[in-house]
Length: 232
Image (cartoon, rainbow, N blue to C red):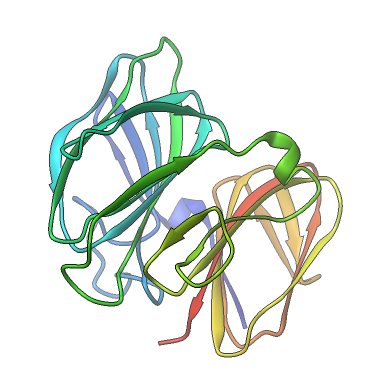
């Protein structure tokens, strides 16, 4: 089953320095019927304007993936990590028993990121932090696996049993969905036809359940991300 989630129906916020689109209930957007999709609890599409950002704040018992679409994000945390990441690069935190961090746009251009919060398999796991500087060539006209569980093969490994893929493609791409798994797909830029049935445009999303194959046909150059996770 394919369930399209048009961006116009998502929650939004504009704080002046921050413009957000919320795929699930978050902050002032609350919808008790839209709290999560499987273990995916939060997916925010954020635009952070120049010389602004999130001051130091805590997280606990959540796995957080940040995918940079435009600009550069600067991260600092209570574990002593400090770095800046740009387009296509990925940062991850497994907050475990607790971590504080800040995220800023210290440049003179807008920063756009996708931030995903994934529910871990148990509480108070050891904290993890890291990043990976993927290149455009790694995701161009192919699927790039950026995140997996500890027992799988992605450069970034978290605790939960998920796989996250990205692509920037002008060519058709197919993926065989694993048994008892489901997918949440985000059309980051461009547009696509999914499984020859559903058309997605910039900012739209798609829930994919009880399907064996994902087939993405770009309508124009398609930049997309999807999360494969267990059915709950």
